[in-house]
Each structure stands twice: as C-alpha cells, then as structure tokens.
Amino acid sequence: MSDQFLFDGSIRDVITSVLPEDTSLHGQSPELRYTYLPATHAKSLRPENMLVVGIRGAGKSFWWSALQNPQHREMFGPSIGLQKDSIVSIGFGETPNPNEYPGKDTLSSLLNDEDPRLVWRTVVFRQIVGSQSLVRDFVTLKDWENRVRWVREHPEIVEKELFRMDDEELDGSNRYHLVLFDALDRTADDWKAMNRLVRGLLQTVLDFRSYRRIRLKVFARPDQIEDSEVGTFPDASKILSQKTELYWPRNELYALLWQYLSNAENGHVFREGVGKLFSVDWKQRNNVWLVPDSLRNDEAVQRELFHAMTGPWMGRDRRRGFPYTWLPNHLGDTRNQVSPRSFLASVRHAASDRVRQEHRYAIHYESIKAGVQQASRIRVQEMQEDYPWVQNLLSPLAALSVPCPIEDVKRIWQSRNILQELSSKIASSNVRLPPAHFSEGADGVLKDLANLGLIERLSGGRINIPDVYRVGYGIGRRGGVKPAAR
Image 1 (tube, rainbow, N blue to C red):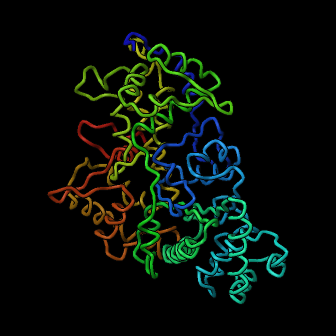
Image 2 (image 1 turned 180 degrees about the horizontal axis):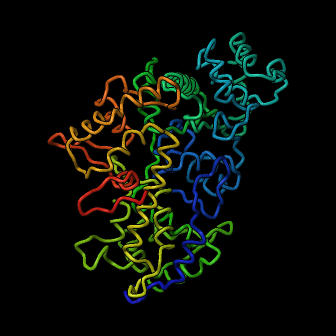
C-alpha cells in the first residue's frame, strides 16, 4: 500500500455526479449498477424471513422495488435463496394500484364491516391466483368489497386453491411466489386504524408460514410493530420474535459509497485512485463493477481510502476526530442506526461545498460538517412528512443546548402552551398519526419521541438529541456541529 496518493478535485465531480440528491425511489426500480447488497441485509431478503424492520431511509422501499425486478433477482438471487423466475407480487406499496391492492380510503371503508386479517388474506389470494380459471367467480370481481365478501363466504375453496398453487404449481417447479408489503404508514391516518391493519397483516403472515412456496414479506418501521395492540393475537411472538432488521454497519455504508463511485460514468477516476492505494482486483458482472472484498470488509482499508479524499482529521489535529468514524457517528439516531440516505446526502453535500484552496485534500473537514447539517435538514423534512407533530414539539426547543434537564423541555412546552395547541390540532383532525401516548401528557410525548429515536434519556433527569435531528431542529450543543440555518 502507498501513503502518498491523494485524490484531487476530480473525485468531487465523481461524487456530485453520481450520488442522487433524492434517494427516495417512490416506487421506481433502482438502477442495477447502484444496487449494493450488504451482508447484513441478505438474511432479511431470504424468502423465509417474512417481517423486515428498518428505520426511515434504511432500504425498505429500495428492496421492495428491487425484488420486483428480474435483473436484480438474477444478480442477488444466489445470495438470498431466490430464483430469477420466482413470482413477485405486490400486496401494498407507496404507488397506488387499486386493482392489485386497496388504497387507504378503501381500507378505511372495509374496516367498517370486515376483519383486517380477512382483508389482507383477500389481497394475498388475489395475487396468488391471478387470473386462474378455477376460481373464475372470484377473478371476475372488480371491487374489493365483493372480493373480501367472496373470500369470507368461500373459505374452503380459498384454502384448497392456495394449497394447490403452493403444492403443485410452485413446489413442483421449485419456485417461490413472494407477496410484498411496504409503506404501511399509507394504510391509515390514525394509529388505531393502522394498528388494526398491521395486526391483521401479521396474522396473515402467521397464516402463511405453513406454506412451502407462498411467502409474504412485510417491510415495516420499528414504531409500526412496537405498539402493544399490534401483538394481541395468538402466537404473535412467532412472527415478532423472528423479525430481521435492515441495519447498516459502518463498513457497509462505505461499501455502498464505493458501489456508487466505482459505477459512475466517470468512475474510472475512483477505480484508478483505488489502484494507486491498494492492490485490488476489480471485476464486472452484468456490466456492474463489483466492490472488492477488502473495500467491503476491511475498515482499515476503507479508512485509508476515505482519508485520501478528506484528510486524516476533522480539524487541525487528531483531537477533533477522524472523518471515517466521525461522519457516521454524527448521523446515527438514539439506536446508533444510520440510514444510507443520510450518509449519501452528507457526502454529496460535502463534495459540492466550496473549495478551500489552502486544503490539500479534495474534501475539507468543514465541508463534512456542512454535509451533516444538510443530512439533518433532510431527516427533519422526512420526519415532518411522517410525523408532523414532531415539529410542534422540537422547534420550540431551539433556545436549548443538549444534554439538558427534562424539566427545561417541559417548562418551555408549558410556557408556550405547546401541548394545548397540539391537542387542538389533533381534535380537528389536522395531525396525521398523532403521538400514540399523547393522553399521558408531557411524559407521554417524550416517550413517543424516544420510540422514534429522536431523544434519549440520560442519568440525572436529562435528555439528549442526536446530531442527525438536533442540527436540523436548530438545537445547540456545546462544541458540537452548529445548528443548521433555518
């Protein structure tokens, strides 16, 4: 290895040209060349693992989309036990498709008269039988109300047809039929309805565990399955205890970055630079450059590579920390989970920040701090989309510096009537998915914020807010990254 080579400004062009400003797919299939399968995710994507949990931006919708694509299944199938010609259907997702699955308003109407488990069983049955002539009476139905009623009134036919499809059609050809569920927050606007729907969906998952080749795969956020109401059905633990997580260790975040840089249109700049630092063998499959094992797994190698772009320190000396570890450490929530969306956004913004001529490295440490500010803005915007009430609670705390006493938070909320104003908005139905424990007052909403990974309780009656949220909400920390401009 050499310690002489440093990337010049051209690596900034590679980064800004290839890293997307918005990594949300909105139901679109991801590009194969930018698809990276962490070892930690391979287990979650195997057909037998039917409940997959991940924070916002961890990759739930990404894999929901990728699994639908035959090219992706061919590329990653051997690693996840799924054949290219497996059948993949959609049971629910962000993109409306009313003929394939009911939307939010239809679900709301169905809940008035039907058991949520039966609703989801109907959705799965619709996907499995397709246009099979053996159940022509069902497949000719055009609306979900009548489909659910038909399944309710013909349980034996449903069971026999599912068994036939599983035993003869699928097992006989050694194929799986996956039915994917994502974007569960789009199923309802209030927790009571969503908890009923999620509980019914998990009951349906339990029902299908006994089938060999029919598999459901549910992508959910932690808060969507943690409510006690969700697990109130017999044998719920058999599903909840078997959940897998889309977790991104530090080495996998950097491997994802290398995946993008090596496959950029000008990716030769990155690959040639790597070759000047290390002896690695770049290989291609399906016109996709594969990240060498040492760049995926060896953190010492990753660190040297990243520091060839940024320099070794987050300041003038080592006391400020090291970019390789500093960046993900400042992007984690209270569970120490970092979303790849935040990570890539911070790197892209750092590379697009102004050039400092006095710095011999391509990316300045102040630019990395600016990248964290941008990632935090994005996280706050995402939180506003998912849980608008969080803004009402955290924005008034801008005068504070954390860690701080819990009583300081409560005092601000009380003096500014924050909870009373939020209560009025909830009563007028202007708040989507309001705090689940709002009835418990300040302690209740603090519990809700903690469940979302926004705050953590410390000893001595204090709380802390991780930088990935603190910076975006304009809250200070002595010696920390400055709050983002608002």
